[in-house]
Length: 275
Image 1 (tube, rainbow, N blue to C red):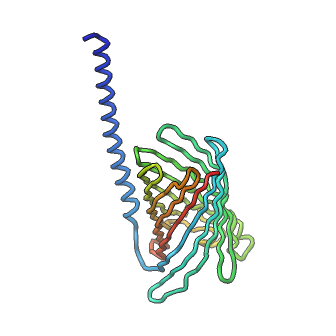
Image 2 (image 1 turned 60 degrees about the vertical axis):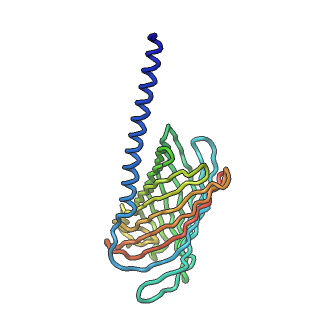
Image 3 (image 1 turned 120 degrees about the vertical axis):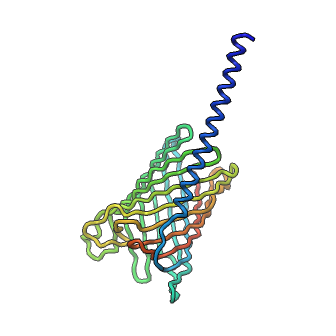
């Protein structure tokens, strides 16, 4: 056997060893990811009793791609409450209770299995009531990190939600202010095929900065502390190269001082169209 033949055999052995080691590492990493997500999703604090609702939630995500790194997103949204109960009495559902609109740029950077997205969006929130209409102006910065592992993709999205104006307050001085909510989503998706992904995710909400003047309000400046948790279960289906539809079930639990105040069940549908 020549030196070249021995070198080729040794090289193939080394490659097989590296591949086997990499596969073992991937399996270990995947087990840790799934275990951690399972804990995040299903081990949640629950205390007290509150209202239970049935709701519909929808987004139309319009994305205009200008280069491999830059895009503009515009996304209107609507939420509708069709059922509400609060033991021992039954209350009337709210109907349309929330309008949303996002718009802003997204910067994307991909290297290997990692993708980093850096959106910064203006966010309009509208709150119709039977007697009035309130709204707020917000800025959101939401870094998103995707890590691909075979058919699995682990996503971390941190939303820094900054409220700058809220019309819910009677005093004009209180309407201009500042509060920040941090939302940390951890999502695992599995690619069934080239068109279908299965999705499971969990997202707690924490009030980080409370306005010093205005009283806390869900329609205005949020209070500090743990306030919400959302569990997402669903899929994303690519209908065409440009259109994706994502139906999901969302379980939202709301808290005040550690006590459960509301349990909201959503049928959540996002339709995404890439221009």
